[in-house]
Image 1 (cartoon, rainbow, N blue to C red):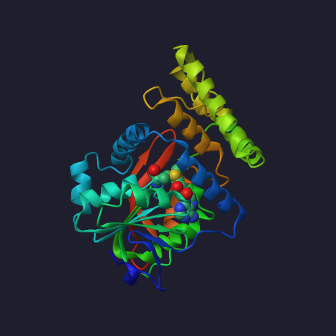
Image 2: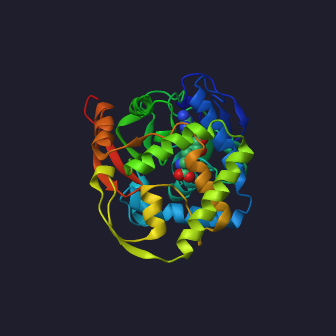
Length: 320
Ligand SMILES: C[S@@+](CC[C@H](N)C(=O)[O-])C[C@H]1O[C@@H](n2cnc3c(N)ncnc32)[C@H](O)[C@@H]1O
């Protein structure tokens, strides 16, 4: 498939389904993020483990953006001709869109080395192509995209406001943006997260991996206690009380120690690695999320909130 007409400058295909626009960043944190994701995407070898995580991620996507069912997502994609999965990681969501919208051209863009893996995995999808590049500077022409899906990515980009401005530029006026950000959590957890992210910059890959394994082990041990307590509210610290499992209470309010027995150890380790490794990982309150979108010319017509995140589907404001 040739998509060079969508780009402002001439692009070179590395393979029939792979284009490189940019593979390095001048920003230290973004470079560190790229490196960290390049390593993370190679962490889980077991394809069956990955498939389990991907199935869970797809179910979650339908909730995050209000589609509820795959049939609704398919119908939403019917009139979308060019779809961008911005920060596609291993590309399974881009592949999903390509399967649900065979009439469309789907582009999966990522700044990490993941695109080399995804372009291998999904080489039989004829309407799907991967691009290594910065979603804040895509190289795409104005107004060429009908749907930007930016799932679990915006907070990792160098300046999220600039990334949104780029989405505004490349989307056609009737285009839609699905976007997700991390939610600010209780004060002790926020302070520890900020501290750890600084600290992990000094650690080697091996040390970060060991740290992730220790966090998984902590999460597993706490969760296997099966202790439920009625915790007090501590509003000064932003801690919400009520009846909760001990591991969940510690997880949300103090330290991310992810453990999911269904997903298993490798995925749990990779999830803990994903949290503390990338240097850019901004968190937002609900009003900060809505304001950031409005300032970039977007109006949310669907908003979803969970303890971990805010997400939604936005339209471009007229003349924005
Ligand atoms: C948490 S992962 C999410 C991957 C995928 N969207 C998913 O839901 O499975 C974040 C991804 O965003 C990518 N990313 C971060 N900053 C980026 C940027 N400026 N341009 C392109 N990709 C970026 C990372 O390399 C990583 O693959």
